[in-house]
Structures are given as C-alpha cells and as structure tokens.
Length: 134
Image (cartoon, rainbow, N blue to C red):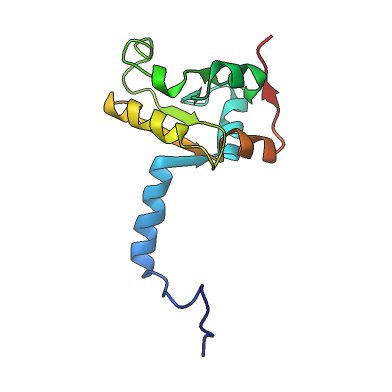
C-alpha cells in the first residue's frame, strides 16, 4: 500500500497525458544548459534575448545574448531578423516575469519564442560565464 502524503494524495496523470504535457512544455521552454551548449557550438539556431534593463545587462548577461528590454520588443526592433527566427528570452530568474512579458510580445508579433527557464540566476547557478559590456 502506497502511503498517503502531499505527493501521493493526488494521483499522477496517465502516462499518455503526461507525455503530452511534458512534450508541450518543451515547446515553450528550454534550460540554461541547453542554451549554453547551443551557444558554444557557434550555430545555436536562435537569438538569445536578455529582456532586463540595459543596466542589468551591462553588469552581466548570458554570453552571446543581445539586450532588448521586454517593453522595447517591437516589430521595428526585430525587423532585421527573418520571420522564422527563434527567439529565446530570459530575465533575472524564477522570481521575475520579464521573460514571460517578452515572450508575449514576440508571440503577438507572430515570432517563434521560448523561455530560458532559470534566467540569469540559473545561468550563474550552472557556473557559466557572464558576458559584460565594457
């Protein structure tokens, strides 16, 4: 008999439903390790966007990222990128919803987008170097 506790009192979803759920999550998000690995390949296949303020970006950002604060994501600002360009957005970390705001703006513009979960906090937790603005 399985003991009842906060984990087991709600049964797990059937495997087919879990497969759908977790597969769909991967179409919306990626993690710091996968971004780092793709960036160091030299051909990541996406544009990494730091949606924090320019001041925070200057203090330290994920290596290879560009700075576009979420409120500045406009059709004009991203016009230089082909329409099928995948954008991966991040903010400060799990306590920040700036990446969600940036993702909403990109999605409204019809652009493919994913969130790098963990943000800059996750990046640093993994031990990855920060880019700096001189």
